[in-house]
Image (cartoon, rainbow, N blue to C red; front, side):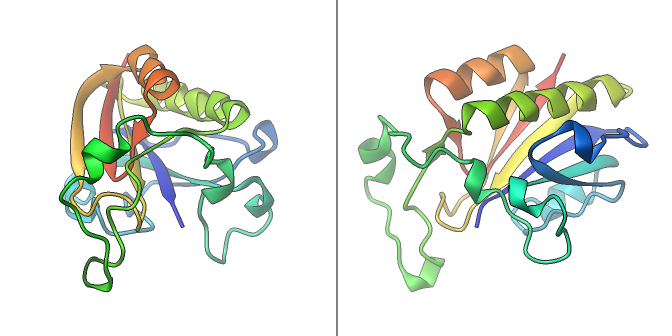
Length: 171
C-alpha cells in the first residue's frame, strides 16, 4: 500500500481540519514516517508531518493508513520500459521495481496541493517535503532538488511523480 506524506519543515503545527478535506490525513509534530524508506533522513529534521490516506479512512485512523485509492492506477508511465531495463522484481527485494511513476486523481491532487501550500506557509523558511514510499516502486530511494509548488504540479500533470522519492519544495 502506498504511503504519501507531506512535511512542513520547522513548523509547530498546521491546524488542518479534517472536515475541510475529502482525503483522510493524520497531522503529527514528530517526523516519523509510516514506512521506513526516509526514516534516517526525517529523524534529523523537525517540523510537522501529514500522513495522507484514502477518503474512507477519515473516521478510522488507527488501522492501516495508506493512500492507494487516491492514486490514478490507469496512468501510463511513458518511460516505464526505460526505467525497468535491467531491474528485477523478486521476493529478495520485496517485489520492488514494478512501477516507477504515478499520478494522483485530479480532485485529490487539488487537496494535496492545498496541504503543501499550507505546509509551505507554516514553515519558517517556506520549505516542505512531499514523499512517497511504495513497496512496488523503485528499490532505491531518491531525493529531488528543490522545486516550487508550481513546478511540482507541472511535473505531476505532465510526466507523473516518481515513487519512493522525496521532493524538496519551496515557495
